[in-house]
Length: 98
Length: 135
Image (cartoon, one colour):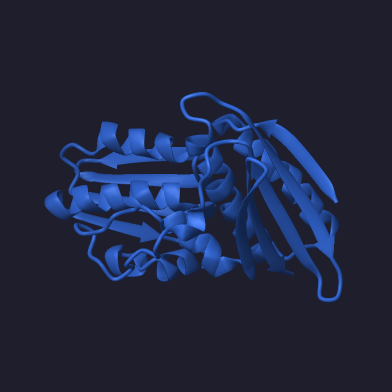
């Protein structure tokens, strides 16, 4: 997986490409930890993401909890496979998918 | 039937996925089913990596069989580690809020829901977990 990062003032955009799974989820977790201070809007672009496993869900939940405290988190360009995972696990009610 | 025996390490999840994908591509498996199977590999092989031999590492075998009429794929994960039945775990409550949410059990729950059959047995000192997906 690759992560393309774009920070404009308090808006952080992370564009993911590949698979968000056991092997790659720590990469996203580290990136969020390192960049989240002062961010009021976190946008995750899933346009290049094939799928995610529960390891990815764990990182998204952690990010959502942080952003519930300091602003807003939005996930964009979610494919059908990932949307099904969100619905199946109840994450569609926790996350904001646009 | 084809099988791969490999050390249960994080780095090898990718090799197991590539091994299974190669067999799936050979039978023109639809992309959606392939991605669901790839997720299942991440969860199930990942479980072996994290729990079976801790703190040591050990081997795992992944076997893939293709059945006809209807076409289905059976994938079996075998390890010689600690006895562990992931199916014994209760399904997670998927209605809780972000703050109340516990991530435990979500992976195996996803596998249960996306596969057509799943079974576990402990035999001769081996954890044997089997999934079946109709293609």
